[in-house]
Length: 148
Image (tube, rainbow, N blue to C red):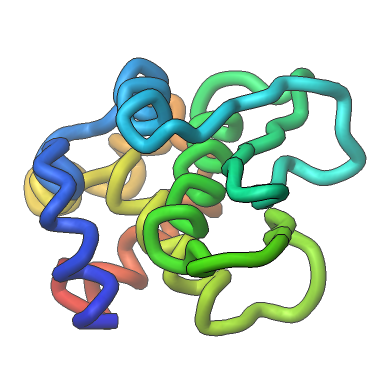
């Protein structure tokens, strides 16, 4: 996890310092030439690479924190797990949890609920602000486990 955190901190985006939003996702995607496609999907989203081009597909029916969580999760796959060559695909919420899925989850959780919010707000306050209870619980667990 330490390697992933070091890699993420090089982005200089305010990750884990301030809540990142949709503008931040699209700015990072533009910087790294990742195309975001919104369409009806049976999964929340997925990252894939074809012929040297990178894509994030997100379910067009998602909104708010759920959509942002999927976008940041898939962007995490690109930033942390992009292959040097060849095709790949990573699907949000499909299959058993792996190290890569956990790292993408951590990236998304800290992007949406940074350490500064964890240190000054209660879980109930974050839920009242509109964050799903499961997302808040996951974020507090990350803080406890990794102190980030």
